[in-house]
Image (cartoon, rainbow, N blue to C red):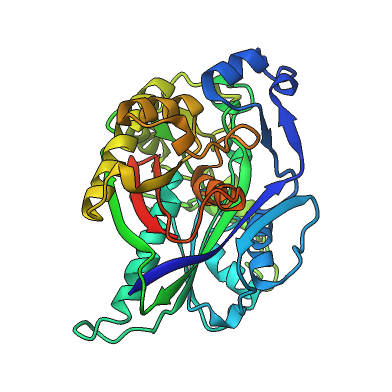
Length: 399
């Protein structure tokens, strides 16, 4: 008995930006990008939200039309799923549309999954593996008679959607050539007679070099210091000559008080390893990455995580029909294939026309693999990813 994947979906924005087109923004060309990454183009969600992409990836699984225009959708399933049969929604993303409510809660409403519990998860590019493992664990726990009583979970929806292009510094060619937008989803169903997910191996390493970061800025002015409330009697009297009107909120006083959004900002920058001489014109909330250090981490961890997950499932590489890795860089995948002594034909490559879509890349690539017709019921596959944090993980799955 165990959880099985019964459907997958994928959504990409229609806007396709080629490598040569990026030369209008930075000094680059198709040869430079392709030789280093394997990426030929990426998709850009201009006015699409993260929720739009997620809803589009899920819509065919439930027999719905996507609400947003400008999205290309593909799916693999055997039958349309009743949205009210979903008991759990896990949404992995680093680009939510809002802090509250969670993206999973918004998606629950959009899809009509009225019986589901829903929450978000952030494990960066490893988000799908972490969410898959969490969903499977909750399904098992809901059936564990020795544990506490829990909501019964028979079906779970795992969704990953990203708008990385909105966290991209488009003047930094070391990062802007890599990222794209998209969404992927899968539905898990508990099967009393067969297990689909055979093992999940998760691990973290400390990113002591801060090789992959994206800071978050707050805009609310903080009218306090360590002594308490900031107060300027003369300014207050001038702005509120007739006293404060609770029915007509006026922000002029706070704005002129000298308050700043986040007095801890410099400590946050120091912790994140941000340079004091960073270009002030560069976007603050943008991805900063040391490509060489991430390459070194990724090429090592992909192999070890696959090996750990297979060992936990009592299987070997000979039992594996396909490996579906995080689509960060083709060179990383080729390096891992060589290190594992496996042909590239055993690795799903989908990065060429979508770029690195963070947590969405594995479920998107999984959908591509299932639609290829080369996989069959009973085949064993491995999904594997790595991301900021540093996070990584792999899962062995029988289709």
